[in-house]
Amino acid sequence: MTTAAHLRDKFAVVTGASTGIGAAITERLAASGAHLVLVARSAGKLDEAAERLSRRHGVTVRAVALDLATADAPTRLAKTLADEGIEVEMLVNNAGVSTRGPVLDGDPARFRSLIDVNVTALTELTTLLMPAMVARGHGAVVNIASTGGYIPAPYLAVYAATKAYVVSFTRALWAETRSTGVRVVAVSPGPTETPMNPRGTRSAEAVAATVLRALSGNGPAVVDGRTNALTALLFGRLLPARLSLAVARRIMAKSGE
Ligand SMILES: NC(=O)c1ccc[n+]([C@@H]2O[C@H](COP(=O)([O-])OP(=O)(O)OC[C@H]3O[C@@H](n4cnc5c(N)ncnc54)[C@H](OP(=O)(O)O)[C@@H]3O)[C@@H](O)[C@H]2O)c1
Image (cartoon, rainbow, N blue to C red):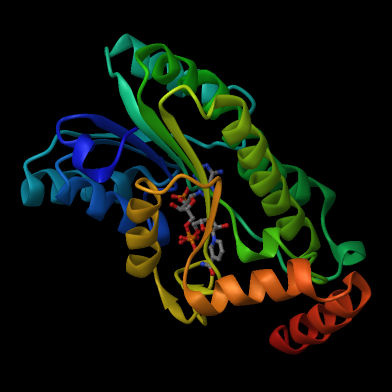
């Protein structure tokens, strides 16, 4: 099992590390002594973060600018890591994009790209990087989902559906690999204040703390924060599906005003 205490001098790969929740996770991991591979599209932001994190925490930080919506990006990342002899102890699939509005007003190309980042890249990176962890008998894969993964979300339909995939995929993977020594967990934030969601109420730092804590747990899925956990339970399991959808539609329509 890989907890925060086991990360010292080991490498963690964090996608979507240039801003928001990903940046907060890298700060926590570096403070735990982990070396880092930062992945996102914005090369400049990644270089700045790499310089800051290595200066502040004395860890090695490698920045890899990559568009995870492109088909060969996960394979290229895995090859870069292998070529540089980087043994990955932890993978945090955090990169994500969102789009709001009625499905029928949406741009199919944008939906495709969103699914490529939120679903395809996450699945491929897990498939490419986790076998070496299993072979070593330790490591961790953390997939960042969302409370939207527990509740179909009108006006955020494609995004929430990708997050339902992340929760379902991670739970199944957890069941397949639970005796391997590799920790697999989906962490679901609710509304969190980041560039993706400036009106979010939780802080990215609180979510990052939940991610690190989730390493020491043993369940397949964790929701960040008590209110969010209650919301996921209520809308995802306790309320009848039609009522849950009707309330979700009202809330989402209002929040889009
Ligand atoms: N904020 C919330 O309320 C909230 C709630 C629930 C779940 N989440 C989830 O938490 C995760 C982080 O979100 P956030 O709120 O921190 O969002 P954010 O601040 O917008 O950060 C998203 C990160 O993903 C990267 N990214 C986006 N598209 C990419 C691409 N094509 N290739 C590579 N990297 C890409 C961005 O970097 P570049 O732009 O530099 O590529 C950035 O580092 C996401 O999975 C999101 O769905 C967020």
